[in-house]
Image (tube, rainbow, N blue to C red):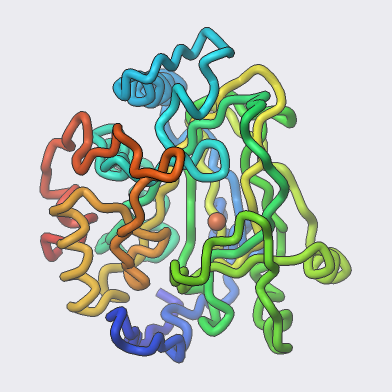
Length: 346
Ligand SMILES: [Fe+2]
């Protein structure tokens, strides 16, 4: 293995000041892999085709639709008049679901434990000892009239963290072409992340920026001027088109955002992120255990910034009456699942 490792010194506790001073967790030396890793290390992102079969993707797509119906708010995937907030659980940015115990639904854990999904991260990090995030899913209806939306280019790595410290991914379940919304990536931006942040930069005050009391440790919002800065350095903003069963992987330093669909197709994805267990401190693993036991979600980061989500889904200024603290369908507990959750050591 041609990589070097440094143990992180991550301050996890809410009571401690954040410490981003840890050096690169893994430094990848340039080499030829002969697979998708060549493109990933060149551009900071890559689409991996046919990770699960189209039939399996369809299974997950149907599961996500059923999940929306489980709330009994009158949602009907065939009746566009029900594609409104009144008929749907509360989401972020018109389709991202993190609350209601959804991050621990059986279907989410099934996706995380797909052998071909785990294999991607095993190859990437060159270890079989991985832990995963308890991340959300995205189910976005096109042509929503009740959702105000504008691009929100951001990255999910704090500028103080240097080098590649996390890699995000999503498993795609529905056809996703140019009009179907989805992931926009600034190809190549991870490579110039440190150069951009060598100067003092202010996170853009986007209309959907989270309120300051929610301390997102790893979120930076870019302005239009910042977008141009990256483009001037040869980076390219691309819409990632995918078929059911494809997986996209991106370095968390990559500028990105999700675009709402404009065609006829509902967007269906599961966000998945895995990093080596050895990156996590015992304190983080304990926090993960608490999240797991209470069906709580986490950020995209599996090994640090495990920030148990305390915010409740709000509807008309009050906690959503459909709020729930556990999944509709609990996951089947296996050794693989417990290891990825960080509960069981390797
Ligand atoms: Fe993001």
